[in-house]
Length: 114
Length: 116
Image (tube, rainbow over all chains, first blue to last red; front, side):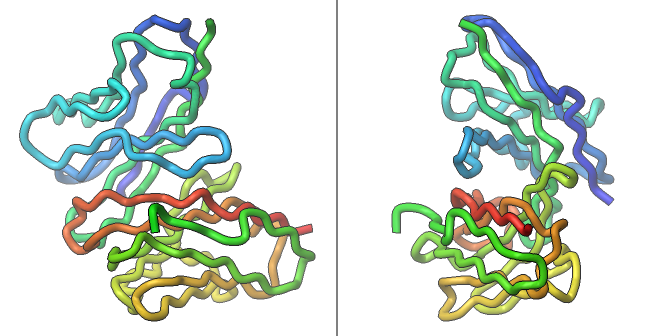
């Protein structure tokens, strides 16, 4: 069965610092990969997604993610964090042909210090 | 509409009562999904609709949970004889097609269910 691991439950960074959120998946082939963000009291918003092709994916709000097949990873990065980026971030995988069902990681809560 | 809407936003009920949660997907989206977000289990898939049929209901935790979709639009998730472990935020999402696996799922704000 597929699984998604986000090793960091909580991360704190200073505003302006760089950010990397880790995501590892377990799946026999290359799944579809997604990063979502959830702000307090809000639904989930898609930041970016990877299906195939270029392994460096650009998303909204200045985020990018890199797919590394050898490490089964899809880490999310941002070069300079803004206070408004404080939220919870979820990595998710979808199995091709499985009707778009998403399997989510446990999430990483990001706090940003001024 | 502009986005996925869900109602009510909050629901408090007593153990043993039935509840209905409603989801209005984005107009024109044929695929609709229900997920549950709880402290202990994280975000879990419940059920997927393609039109009015549900080809994947593998995530429904028990036979107390059911869902339907009518007119290819509105969906209702029903929980019968609620239990305290049903307390969670129930999220609905919709996507344009759903069959390719590459659709973007757009999520609603959720319904927070509290079972006393």
